[in-house]
Length: 296
Image (cartoon, rainbow, N blue to C red):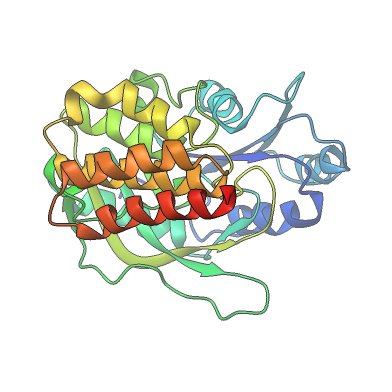
């Protein structure tokens, strides 16, 4: 490990002043100290600026930037990338925190691997209010290549689990600002398409606390899955299992939004792409029945 390597940690935040301190402290209290922390405020309406400035006044490693308008998570992370100086990049959401040794372990692992991956993504503890923290993946650590992702062999965890080579993230121009959801999958797909590989480290090094906000997970708009599909279709069309998965998720989102016609259409596409998944055919029939029942 090169002790001189600067690691840039970017925290995009929006109206989470009550949780932000926990995320910031988890960065500043790392066993690896050669870091810079870039907090990018997506035009919060609470006291986020006050919280961030309190830390900035105490620690010269902290940089606080406020967007002129609310622009979404992709734009906000990209602002942090533009201001970063580190050889490595990390993205910590404001509802997450690192374990004390996270950065030290990540940089040690990066230098132990040959070839070095573009991104290491490590396991995470997931915690919801009133429930016990769980580690979501039970997979062996390994290099992840294109076929692993598009044959659905490995599930991809989000940016708080990433340890990235800065040069590669900047080369592909960071996150796509056309996406509000699924920005992480889009970026990882673009990294993979450049010929780079990923590496999965099956050791939880971050904790995510699920609360509403900038990183909220919902099915509110299947548009972004369709955008992902349209953007990358020429490169993924041969991966029928992955296509089937995307079609199925769009179908589910559409059904929850009350669009049974679209749900049926995408369910049928999912079945055609992967005929062995007869579940999709049954769901197509179910969606049709539920709409008919509603009309009667």
